[in-house]
Image 1 (cartoon, rainbow, N blue to C red):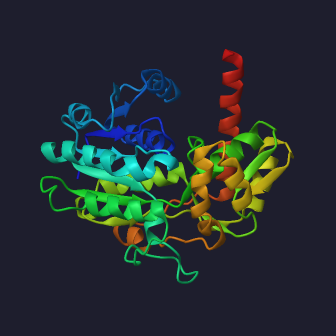
Image 2: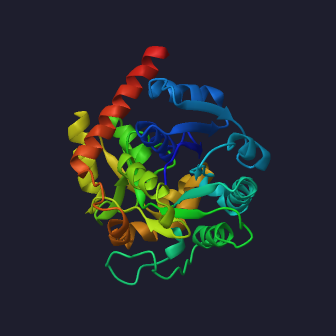
Image 3: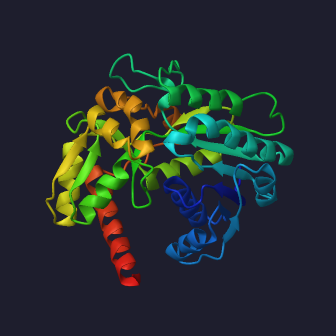
Length: 328
């Protein structure tokens, strides 16, 4: 399937930005959709004001806004998200809005999601897309509701797929990712925090690698109607992440692990921190994703080594911090 034009919802978020960059690299005319025109304009500037990029503001919860922005597109990439503390009430209404617009237009949809619906692991083996979904957390159950709504037969004029990412990192990752604030603190030479235990190795995907896989799948007609894993480059402990990041930044400030007591206390002042507590099991008994299904359809999985990916991320954050200081 030849992709000529695409709409990316949540364009200025970590995943939206890399998907846009990958689409443009492939010559796909891309409509970047977000709430803030200044943020969209900054995105365009960061990408070098490419000719194939159109900026559109709107509300993803308003189906008419999505419908207007999606005119003439082949695929809608739904990478918009809601804060942790709003997920229970807002995730499904946002998804319904997107699907109503896509169904009216007969446009394909690729939804970017995570691993919460799987629940606890049975063993340490990498899980494939057929792994049973038995979520035991509020957010996991809500994400499973989203999947059922997304693949509902009532959307009979559109084809769709869900791509599932583990925790992620990269130059475009922000506070929405567990590692975002950790790496930003290290890059700035400030003390930082790390969510969960720092000794248990976990899987992270480098966002530019994820974008390659997501766009590859979106370009294949036979990939629709299914879930797809987007795995990372093996596993790594928080301790090793911090060591690589410190080396790249030339700093050695303290990084403190945040467990249940710390997050519960912070949650009294920052609501989103309280919501992380129920997901801490993933830092103690982490799931790993199998990429065999992707390999069968597409080929080798792009897997940037952690040393390279973390170093590139720190360097990108430092450049951004310098620009922010220069403007202030």
